[in-house]
Length: 578
Image (tube, rainbow, N blue to C red; front, side, top):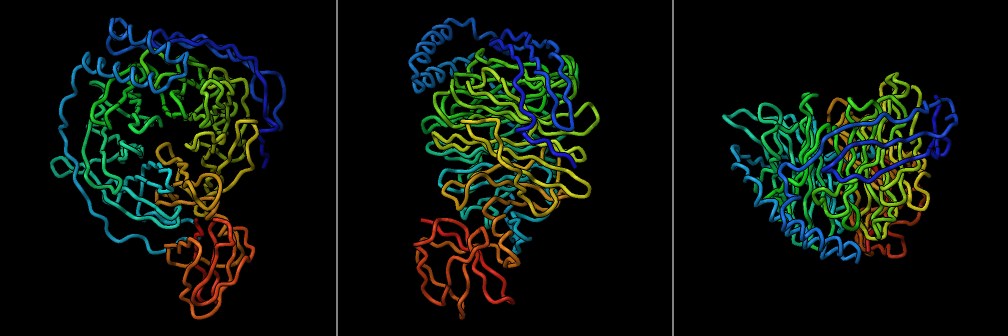
């Protein structure tokens, strides 16, 4: 089996880019790849075919004199770097957009509530079980206090469940479920998205796309405990929605929500609507519309820049990845595009995310996408990187390129702590009879230098666009990097695993306890065992002896440890925090 590393595959192509407002989008970007062989594989060195798409507002707000006046003030705010004033002015634009657009009709469908039953009671190896059953769509997000949330559509009861972990993923609480059942017939959820707000925006925002016959985008907003749900309709127009992407910004305490809703069912009528909410999901203004928008992805940085990735349209030639940035909180007409095209063969499911650094114009940005090698059906995982906020993408390479496996369905995510320069990427590696969840990370000072491959999962994973392994961080957690939420093979069971949980699994022959809930220690704790036990760190090294009664672990670093009892009693996890 031949592996192509990102170091081997780096190239410095000649890139010509042009910034074009989205309202006048006419694509004419050329990416000419530099000559050279990739070990064991040669990627064709062909220029990108020019693409053509018409993108513009659903109305004509750019001609409104009020908005024109505000745009002039915003330009001055951008020059000063005054993001707070920029956002305040964009809030005024939002009000004007809402006044120019027809109000969406009230919801014609009410959701119903499902209360949780019994939670899982076993750990299946190092993979922490979030819930058992069959799952077909997932969403995940986290808070900076370390709390992690997951939303998942469970086929057993056709319910969208919300889960929470407060111990860095070792155990999960099933909070509550929501489902739609018009005339008693429950509707399936095709795709899920989850955003968790903080400050004044401290709600759970669960976005879902229902299957036929409705096939539209809906938002269920709850309190952080999953209760107190309200429904809102980010309806982008009369068209149905078959795919979408959502994200939020991180400015102030009233975080705004952003969504792109796509109708890609018929080639001749594919379109997208870009919508935004500035009032916690209650109302949504259409900021832009576009055509040929396939498999979108959204991400926000530390400031005012919003990023967007999608597959280029088939009519513009195969193999194009479209990478957008918007410098003013998704403002109308402010999208700019760069096209990356490795060759004439197909690409799939691009994702994009910046490092969480300021200023935005110098932030490193990454995109990861799958690529059909020579049109053979052998999908590899490629990346592109930028060091000027996404305005140019001079470097691309192969993140994973096994010749006898498929690498697909990536996720890409930053860590939302100001000044953090790292990014994490995950994807599905599919071999004969097994699917692995792989994770890498990169850093802004050398964005093309990816970490070694780390396997996240123990159980074979499911695969598909709605089941990609979702990255999720646990701030103040016991280990570096991101963990992943994934569904098992055959859509069976919902799991979480991470580097710190994987470390426990690699600690030798110790077997894990069947009790999923970990002990949490802030220094001194009481060990209820009747005989001494040994304490191992995540690398498998014994670091302390645990005695019955009071134990002082304040000398140990923060992390996840394993208390190994007598051989016939297995082991317990303990999380040391401060």
